[in-house]
Length: 382
Ligand SMILES: NC(=O)c1ccc[n+]([C@@H]2O[C@H](COP(=O)([O-])OP(=O)(O)OC[C@H]3O[C@@H](n4cnc5c(N)ncnc54)[C@H](O)[C@@H]3O)[C@@H](O)[C@H]2O)c1
Ligand SMILES: O=C(O)C(=O)C[C@@H](O)[C@H](O)[C@H](O)COP(=O)(O)O
Ligand SMILES: [Zn+2]
Image (cartoon, rainbow, N blue to C red):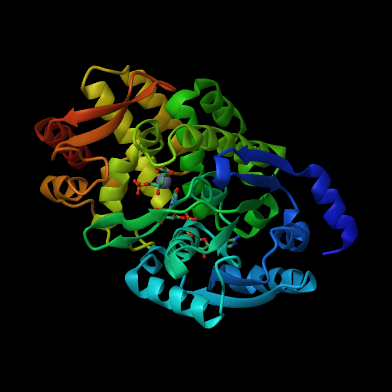
C-alpha cells in the first residue's frame, strides 16, 4: 500500500453520507480504498480493533489490513470464522463475543467486520451486545455486503425458527467499500449480490433497473459501472434507512423478495452449498412480481422482464431451481409465519404495481399465498 496509491484512491472515493443524527456515518466507495484504511480508521480515535473475518477473506486481506491499522498506532487482533451462512449462529456469536472481550476491546475501540454479509451481521451483533455496545466498522468484501448489508445497522444471527430472528439495530461508525476487493469474489457470489442491486430498481427506480439491464456486465467486470452501482445502491438504501431506521414503516420495502427468499433459506437449512441469500432473493423477487401479477396488481409482462434479466445474469428465479427442492407448500407457509413483518398473525408482503412501483401490503390471506405457491410448484413439475 504505497502512499501514492493511497492518494490516488482517496481522490476517487465516492462518499455517501448516512445522516442519522448522533449515529451519522459515511459510506466510502472506490477502487483501491483499502490503501487508505489505516488513516481513515485511525481518525475514529480508537486505540484497538478486533478484526472479524472468515477463512476465505482472511488469507487474502486480513494481514495487510491489520498491518495498516498497526502502522497508525492501533493494537489489533484477528478472529477468523468458517465461511458460509451457517456461521450466523449462536455458537459463532459466543466465539466472537469472547474473542472481543479477550482482546480487551473497550466501548470506544472498534470491532471491524472484514468480509461479506455473514461476517458483517455477526460481528455487528457482537459489537451491539458486548459491553452493551462497542463501535464497529464495516469493510464489506462481497458485492452484496457493499450494496446492502454493511449499510443500515441491521445485525443478527439465524435461529432454527428462521432467518435473522435474533439481532439488534446497531449502526456502524464507518463503511469502507473497496470495489477492487470484489475482483477475487467467486462468480456465484457476484451474481447473488447482484440480486440486491436489482432490488433497488424494482422497489422505486425503474430507470435504475433499465440501467442495470444495460450495464450489468460492467459491474461484473469491474469497470466504472461497478462503483456507480455500489454508490447508487448505497444512496438508495441510505435514503430509506434515514426515513425509517427501525423499520416501523417504509424500510420494509427493502424486504422486497425476502418473505419468499428467507423461507427458502430456512428450508435449505442455511446451507450455502444449496442456496445463498442473494439466490433466495432472486427467486423471491421474481415470485413477488409473479404473485403481484396473479393478484391482478401488476402486468405479467413486468414479471417476465425481471425473470428474463435475472436469468441472463445466471441467477435462479423459480422454486424448482432450489437444489434439493424447495419443500412443501406447508413448509414454506410455516417458514413465512416467522417473518418479522407478520402483524396480528397475518402476513405482510412487498408487492408491486409494476417495475419501480413496490408497496407494502399487510394482511395478505394465507389462502392466497397457498394458491399461488401451489400453482408455482405445479407449473414447475408439469
Ligand atoms: N444486515 C443487512 O441489512 C443485510 C442485508 C442483506 C443481506 N444480509 C445478510 O448477508 C448475508 C449474505 O452475505 P454475503 O452474500 O456477503 O455472503 P457471505 O458473507 O457468506 O460471503 C459469500 C462468500 O464469499 C466469500 N468472500 C467474501 N468476500 C470475498 C472476496 N473479496 N474474495 C473472495 N471470497 C470472498 C465468503 O468467504 C463467502 O464464502 C446473509 O446472511 C444475509 O441475511 C444482511
Ligand atoms: O436493511 C433492510 O432493512 C433489509 O431488509 C435488507 C435486506 O436485504 C436484508 O436481507 C435484511 O437482513 C433483511 O432483514 P430482515 O429484517 O427481514 O431480517
Ligand atoms: Zn437481503
